[in-house]
Image 1 (cartoon, rainbow, N blue to C red):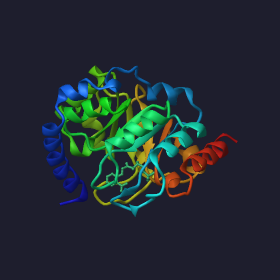
Image 2 (spheres, rainbow, N blue to C red):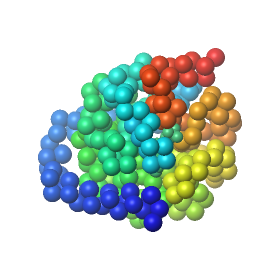
Image 3 (tube, protein in one colour):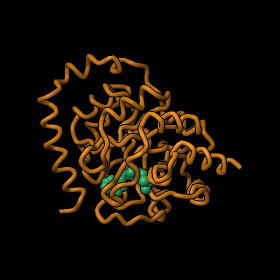
Length: 261
Ligand SMILES: O=C(O)c1ccccc1NCC(=O)[C@H](O)[C@H](O)COP(=O)(O)O
């Protein structure tokens, strides 16, 4: 069993339990459910840097990255730094995150927010909306084509954008459909944790131009971004590089300043 298999096994149990604890009607009645949406696609298209900065306490590949930074300071810091969007990991068991992190980020910044989790059920998309997200992640490695179709259409019906994540050509080919907004290539193999920016480079020509291209994971310097831009990438998801510092917002600000200069 890979770590990804374990995460998905646990996620099914978690979602079943949560459905019993918080009914759909309660999610739909939340104040944030009817708010206006913010578009990550638009922000990235208008931006010359395209940074999506992540709040990530720990991960299966790195264990603890940083438990000392609170999410509202980081949200404000990222916004001041000029990132396009913020990604908030909401998985508890493997990443130390929660939906409350999403809620606190929503309360403390005007950035579009990505609910970063392992979405396998429409219920999690309702949660994403109720807790302040503007965009959800679907991971092709753990979903069938029918799952991707149904979950992405459901997200769009709630005015949420969809970032589809792939790691190889098979995942990409089975997933391309009009109900997606952005396609992210994860440079980290989620089964082995091996990281290589070549994954983004190799898949770049296979992603149709209708989608905004995002390169995810393992990005730690501006040279990598400058190179990935030449492969057509407009967005860059960065977590650990900012979160491992004492001040993630300041780290993102310096990074963006250097990228612009
Ligand atoms: O980061 C992990 O170890 C991981 C393990 C299993 C599934 C997902 C995982 N990460 C999620 C991500 O995609 C990253 O948090 C995100 O792309 C940022 O990556 P990085 O900049 O390398 O922190």
